[in-house]
Length: 238
Ligand code: FPP
Image (cartoon, rainbow, N blue to C red; front, side, top):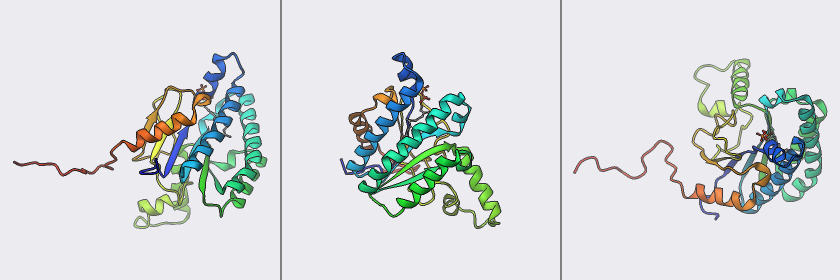
């Protein structure tokens, strides 16, 4: 299993609402179950030795959901972060957030800043939460930073630009998993997933088990990643 393990996995945790609807439950119940799944998948990632796990928890587009759902999601996040903090310290998990932090409620922003600071030296795994996140927004913010820094045309390279993104210092994404049958990236890690392998499953996020997670990783391990190159020399002439 350890051979050819993805270094960075990104997950679009989709289908919480449908999971709840199917059971006649309020949508927030689906998110609660989703948060429990996230804990289990984080544990499995730690056990497998995944270096970076990025979870798409709240997109910039999610701000336009009904106010009540947004508030409940923020509450859930707060409970989740404060509840998981001790475990992160114990297990050596470094926490990072990517996304537009200015739009988050102040108390959540402060909790995030504190969690990031206090886990900054931990190195068993990095857990990244994408919150108030949009890939296009992240790229635009990076462009604006470059302008503010008065970078010259020559100074803007792929390497220097990557350092301006929220994911500065993290490896590119190797595998993106999306649950619930939708087959799109929905503004998730647009720059970072340029060569990512994609895994789509019909399973709704609250039903996504660690067994399915492992089989997604095994599926990745069987793929041949060419990054636009030709790996096996082709015989062009006889
Ligand atoms: C997509 O389901 C999921 C979200 C918008 C929120 C994801 C949040 C969680 C899993 C809980 C919080 C997680 C952590 C790690 C704190 P959806 O509501 O779009 O589902 P639908 O497409 O079926 O309506």
